[in-house]
Image (cartoon, rainbow, N blue to C red; front, side, top):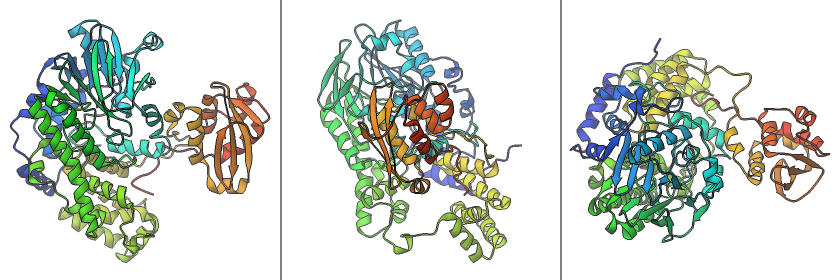
Length: 621
């Protein structure tokens, strides 16, 4: 039985009010998104990894359960296939959350951003070859360090390509950012990403509709082939397969390592993910370090000065292109001003003493920017981006001493329930507020009861109903997904597993030895380690030939290259298997996978390392 509710009258009224305030739609975005279409495969279907078939409902009229602005973005992101972008430049869009771009060189194809996983990337390359010739891949460019821009590389490169010295180009710092950005807090980020991308939601009008940035993330084989060329300097030039490229490095913008670049012979400018057809995240709700909005704006302005005058077509790693030097410059300047406006106005208001919540509630774009579709919050929002700028400069504390040492949610919840006169009284007040369409207040109020008594079925149901309506009203794809996933988990609590899924295991397997040992320090249980006392051993990684002195003191784990204490020999995969519980030390010793006097010390250390359950609770204690 489907527990999901219809849109309420209050939600439909909110949609009508928003629709009346939206920019005029002259159809030009649909013309841009469809321009140059060559062909596709039915439903962009890639078995086991990707399909647009579940989104067929987007061909109908907008349902009351979807924000009208997000519905428009969802229809644009549903267009899929191979498109001619400009002279020598082609894109496959709608085969993943990101775009894959092909540059025609003298012998073959230079590929930009080979998607999230191998199967859709291979399907895109096959489609390109069917329409433009069966030519080899002659180079790969990663625009930046997020997985949807490199994870499908094994779908376009063979072992022979890699062994043969294929040029794989990336911005300086790419590899470290790619394998490390999500590791230290990888379990928490990964779990929150299931909320942000609606991974467990049904794909329909009451569930996942769009991510704003693209449809959703493909589910095929993810891999990483390290770059062979690092770009470290703006203005650096490189020729691949007869195609000259001029690079602009843009660190700490949309990603820690990112770059834009220009193809002079084609007049084509790639803006990576720094300028796409929406307001991006200065802070991503899945969790990551806050991005630098001021630097972001600066680098867009630099791109205008370097490239806009010669640009015939501007394309990016998501969404659809812009054509013509004037249109490219206009788009870039508006995107430049979008991020700097948020940055400057948040700090202006903060210097007046406003708190992050007050700033976020009051911030609005100027009319010139609000009149554009590509500045709307389909992915990032003004609200949470404003808080991000505040956090970057002033941190989490708003200055009010009442917020300096607040009670934790469970304890605070119990006291709020008591203050309200008990659970029944709180629910009665919340139900009345729900009837008035005050869903934000309902969610805040009933959250206290859910955390005070997570078994209260009536509280969970009302909280789910409120979050659901907030999801239906959300213009941001991630906000919708967060609200609807929260509602789903309140209605259908996930049963506890005796063998919980180990979070961040995939990231661990990609780490170099030094980073692997560093990641273990955040698994160390401080309470247990404090009782264990000091330990020391030498870890010898037989697969890399590296030795590390590992020590435990004052409940802190340290490591450095060299030796210190009895030695234990093993490979990185074996250590990972021991840490996440895929094998035991006894079994590894018996199989000869672990050896040395230091095995005894390792046996004392391993029980002190926590194992992270991926499916930890979010909407309940």
